Image (cartoon, rainbow, N blue to C red; front, top):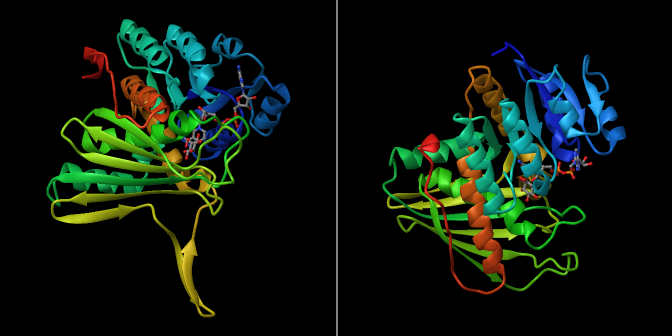
Length: 337
Ligand SMILES: NC(=O)C1=CN([C@@H]2O[C@H](COP(=O)(O)OP(=O)(O)OC[C@H]3O[C@@H](n4cnc5c(N)ncnc54)[C@H](O)[C@@H]3O)[C@@H](O)[C@H]2O)C=CC1
Ligand SMILES: O=C1[C@@H](O)[C@H](O)[C@@H](O)[C@H](O)[C@H]1O
């Protein structure tokens, strides 16, 4: 493998632009070689000041560009499958933003294509695994420091949603992170998902029922719940409280500095995911680059993308009734065991 990844970033929207900046300024061992966006002006704006980078409007053109040897996919989730299959055919390192794909059938096609290739090329953008507090809680669980983990309580609150954010996307685009986090914390698969639609906020756009309460069980019977609330207005908050036999651990609640002044006390709430998880994205992308230069991957696999897509599928079905829906998973291929 080469000493430098020459990355084509596909999609220069909110997340793609953020990754382009980090690749260009903070990540070692990688450079932006091409930026692709159907909105060519957006791609052109994104490569400004990046020597040697080209702006293109077509992903396939970037994959066929001899100067490109890796790809970072940051288009909306429903477009991932097509680009992934083309990138797998090129056998180059791939960082695919979550979700791998929005449904289990298409995610399974990706797993099968990678299995056929015979080695792992895809890392999925579940950045929470690279957040310092998530890693600390993961270690407490793995080392059984507080006895057995019994329950996980998650709050996932966004200030607002972009145009076109459907009711299904509360599960496919947002709770997909908790599905991955629960699997990461417990090292188990999720067996069932139930969704309760309670009293909605007047701040949700038409067609979106917000907030929702998602109830989850794992193989050993760990119970988890997620409050997904995507028009919460006050800021961006992603928090977890874990109940153990011998204690309680909370992560992600507040951000300092904590100030007492003028008869009030308090800290800060992050405005968006860039601020809350900025450091985690840096660690995630550096891990991908370092591993890619060794012909490996440095984080969640296509199997993780598939398994979470299966949870999402159960979750979207569960939105339609208040029943518990079983998660259906194909057998795990040897490549991921
Ligand atoms: N890990 C995380 O915390 C986050 C991940 N994401 C993920 O990142 C991905 C992108 O999300 P956003 O940046 O929020 O979306 P966005 O809508 O801001 O940007 C998407 C970009 O893709 C471009 N695009 C659309 N079709 C294209 C095509 N066929 N070829 C090339 N470019 C095309 C659009 O013109 C747009 O510039 C999604 O998979 C999303 O789930 C988004 C936000 C946070
Ligand atoms: O991935 C993300 C967005 O796509 C999603 O829409 C948000 O709900 C998440 O908090 C964020 O991390």
